[in-house]
Image 1 (cartoon, rainbow, N blue to C red):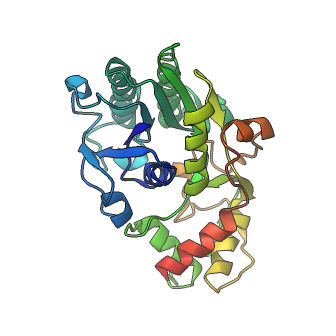
Image 2: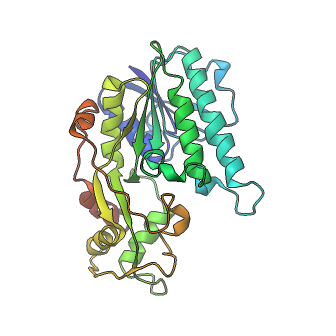
Length: 303
């Protein structure tokens, strides 16, 4: 199957692209710039900016399936206040994503797996309250509304995702490893209140392949792996870095690496759920219990 991965230069799309290629699919990556990671750079590349380009210009023709792994989040909001979060999210998510999928449909692509977020399902009370959650809920609704007998669209709603592709470097992860190793002495050592579900990018890649094979059109699948408090999660990083500690839980100050600004379910919230066995089976029985090993692998890379 000829598969296009929009957002394939990033972690989630990149691991999906690599896994699909390993399975024998003919995979092409689309992003604004060619990927830097050697394994991704070895795959065919098609330049495209789904927000600003006209993807209805013919470049999507010839593909059988699309994995869409791109969206705007808080990192895309200008620090200078020149655009509001609402404006950024509406342009890049609410408007541009459904438009890109409509172009894929019109180009003859028959299957789409859209990479969404778990917030519309696990924090529905934040729809209409939090601009990011509202935008992702709007986008998911619009994307799945495109589903038809000839254009199968399903969504994978993901929690926090961990992973690493050799040749890439993520500043936040580097800072987290340094923090856990005790190399940032001026940064207070504690865990924020609450917790969430986590999954690895490799598990997501397996679920993407399963969704392309067996995903039911119009469905949004809530997937995940392990439910961890932030205390448990951070203590795994400290242990992997050779600096085991018993972390105090605090909610009187913002955590420097896990600030309230990214806690879209609400400051101090605990998000916990289990993906039903029948969903995992439909999605190819993606591997679970992978979080500790992923943390150890990432710490080894950044240490």
